[in-house]
Structure formats: C-alpha cells, structure tokens
Image (cartoon, rainbow, N blue to C red):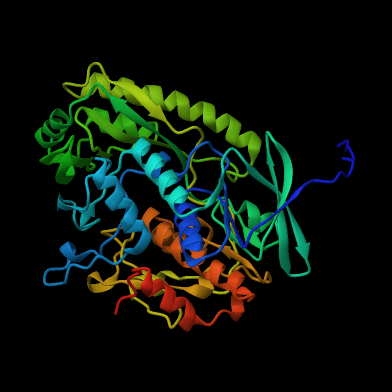
Length: 455
C-alpha cells in the first residue's frame, strides 16, 4: 500500500468542561444531564439531527417499566425516569408518542409499548438540548484524540468549517461504534455477532386490516392499544408469531430479514418496518458496509411489495421514511472496569455504585429477570479501562451476547447517558478523574434529578 504524509498544520482550539461524542439515544440524555449539572458541554453529532437508534432502527422504546405483567402479583414499577421520562412527557405534549400503553397480548416480552413519532423526537430532543444550553455541533465528526499519558486532553473535530480541537476535562463516548474510545487507544473487541438493519416507515396501509389478517391466520403474537392520531383505544402495536404451516407472507419476509412487528402513533402508517442483514465483517468495515447498504435498500422495496401483495387494505403501500444509513446493535465492545454478565441480569443483581436499574430483556420470554425484578448497572461498567476521563455507554458495554441483549436497548442507553453525563460533569467541575468521583456525590445528584435507583 502506498502512503501520503499529511502535513502538520495549526487548528483552532475550543474549550469545554465536557464533550459528548454522538448525539444518539444516550448522547442526547448525557449532554442534557451534563449541562444541567453546570458543566459547559459540547455535543458532537455526525448527522443533521439527534436521536440515533430511537428514530432510525427501533420499533418502540424498551422499556421504562419492569416486566410486571408476566409475573402475577408483582408490583408495577416505572424503573427509568429522570430525563428519559421528560422526553416522553414533552413528546406527549405535541402528539409524538403513544405514552406507556400496557400490552394486552405479548406482555411476557414487554409489559408496555412506548412508541414514538421519529420526526417529532428529533425536534423535541434538539429543543431540550437548546433549553439546557448544550453547545450542539451537528454534521460534525470525531477524527482523532489528543492524549496526555492516560488522560484525554482534547479531540479533533471535523466539519465543513474545517478541523478544530475541542479540549475538555471529561469525555463520554455515545457514538455506538466506540469511535472516541478507539481513537483514545482503549482496548476493544468486535464480535460481529448481530445482524445490522435499516428500517422504513410505510404509509398507505391499514393497521386494523393487518390485525385482521394476522388474527384470521392464528398468527397474532403482540397486541397493544393506546393513543393513535390523538384518539385512545386504537391499535398501536402488532406482531406475528411463527405458525405451521407458515403463512407465505411470513416465510417470504424471513428470507429478506423482515420483522413483522409494527408500531405507530398515526393512522394508516407503520412507523417501523425493520429489515436485517448479517454482515461478513464488523460494521466498522467500510467496504462491507457499502455493499450491505445496497442490499438493505433492495430488501426495503421487496418488503413493501410483500405488504402490498399479501395484506388486505395495503395494496397501495409505499415507503415514506428510511434511515440515512444502516443501524447496528453493536460494533466495538469497549473494555471497561466491570463487565455485566447474564447472571447479573437474570438474577436481578444489585450493586453499591448503581447509576440506574433496568428490567427488560430482548430475548423474553425465553430469558427474563427473575420475578419481574430489576438489575443494577454499576458506575464502574461505564469506566473505560486505562483511561482516566472517558466513559463508554450503551451498546459499547457488555461483552456477553445474551447479556448485551438487555443492556443495549434504547431505554437502557438513555439511562446510562444520564448517569455518564452527570458523572462527567461532576468530575470536570471538581477536577477529578472518573475513578476519583465519590459515589455518594453522584448518587445525590442522580436522585435529585429523579433517577430511580430502586429504593
């Protein structure tokens, strides 16, 4: 391979207390938490909007509650509150969510369905960042790190305005891919054990007729009613189960990685139809990703054709929304001070340094937290090994595949964001390394900001 030596040049420096890389599911919450704690906070996001997987790759937000409905007699608890719940409240005010509607069928998977409007979520998250006085830098990318031994001094940020150095006391990686951690020299693995996906919004459909189609063929597995187009008691979530012999619709859909679950906050609209593809290489491999992007877009059109062909009332279905690029479930797994295990999750393990508790597992009903309980996510699970002032959050933590099927979910990422953003701000304002922060101080601030810690 040939190489080119890039000439050195001076670039301008901007100074902050905290820098958050990635304005997605956890990054939005981390930035708001940091700024509200009193830190001058920068949020770096590569796209022209915020929200990440919440608005690009999901179906509903899983989950603000414990799995109480699957365990008769267990108390219903909202276990994720704080800033994540504030986002839902703001969305409710503008008609951008179903709220926390209770599942009527399929509640051994999740007890609630919290569906959102993707475009309103982008707007609400941006407005909340503005309200918190976060310095938001959209269409901007992390391109390098300035290290001083085991401490990050600053990061290189590039946009159409050029290259800049953002200096700060604390840093949080919310990129999903672990880009900032990798630039900083953190140890990581890339197991490539999940499919990637892209999701589409589909209009010209009938949710009621999709329900009738699944019910008629004894294929209905999920059913939930809630607020849709401003009216209560309307269908907001459906999913199909495998039936024998399989419906041709389901069989052909599986060939293209199509999920049959749909959620919606609007009439005649499937907010998310997800298409999966297993890649040969890690999603950090540019060339493989480029090929997969094409395949996924071909699958999107095939999915719409299947909907038109097989589901009554959907003969004029068409794509109204796609994600700008494929979505991952995890890329780089960052080595942190503690690695959450499946045993921790299913046994409802609690820790002395928790930043949140959580009660959802994406492999339910086959894997559940015992007795409809919750497990804790410890502060040390976010501390990147061998680096003094860097946090990793969301899908970048938890190495075990089955354990990761819990911690990577959207509401978990949001809660981790609040914990990391608060901690990063406290460290910056008190001139502490991440491992020097007294947990009593962090806990005090989290409780003040309405984080539920399972008391």
